[in-house]
Image (cartoon, rainbow, N blue to C red; front, side, top):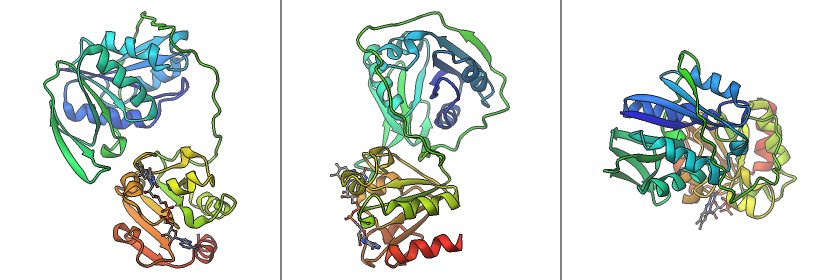
Length: 309
Ligand SMILES: Cc1cc2nc3c(=O)[nH]c(=O)nc-3n(C[C@H](O)[C@H](O)[C@H](O)COP(=O)(O)OP(=O)(O)OC[C@H]3O[C@@H](n4cnc5c(N)ncnc54)[C@H](O)[C@@H]3O)c2cc1C
């Protein structure tokens, strides 16, 4: 059994979610190969070769993969993937963009967002916004799987010494082209990788008030997230949304501020190790999942908390 893991990267560095995906592959068992598809990805390949447990790194370094357009990467993965028992990618926007296309091209069904590996063909995955866990068994010749990073502790980024092999195949489907991207620049940690997340909801009242959360987050070295209500109201950009239709996070500490705790929000954060809720309504459902609850007006509580940090 040999497993192909698609590396998540930005042409410069391996993204942390790759380490969780390799951890899932290690649970399945067998040899683990990592595919790095991109352009100018020498450093990424080098880093991938050091990941603990990786036996081989395949490097497809080509202009066609520069922006990892799924129309170009999917045929590459499908071609290489034929020889593997499993193809795994993190359930990130990128992974979720590429893998369904790979599954279609291999004519197999995809197994989405697994949170545990029961055996080489049986996996657990959340359904109904995480309110039920399905155990799925697949008889597909090649199992195409996206991995929910929060379900697997990352393997060590160092310690391995995998062989690195170049892959010549260049697939330019000619169906899409890269126009541009606007990246939100922040000195704060990335939401899904942060050890501490401070999130604000509709209770923040407006975008300007998020400055209180940014100040607290900067003292804690935390990322800032938001509920969908806060995003929909235009307080903050939608890449900050946590929840069923946003990002899934499981930090050591999650501080929910002015968030009621709708199931769709809980679906994105309830696996956090310690949950703190600040809400002026003592009946708010968020208190049912919180380890520590503070019934208070956030505009008094947050500045107080910031002073104490
Ligand atoms: C298909 C679908 C997908 C969805 N996906 C998501 C998702 O990914 N993420 C998500 O978050 N939601 C999602 N939602 C929306 C979700 O149902 C809720 O509407 C949303 O989470 C509510 O956000 P909120 O808690 O910020 O707002 P509210 O529910 O309005 O809660 C605001 C809270 O702030 C408190 N508050 C107000 N003022 C103060 C104050 N001064 N001090 C302290 N507390 C205060 C209030 O007591 C209240 O509890 C989804 C909904 C659907 C139907």
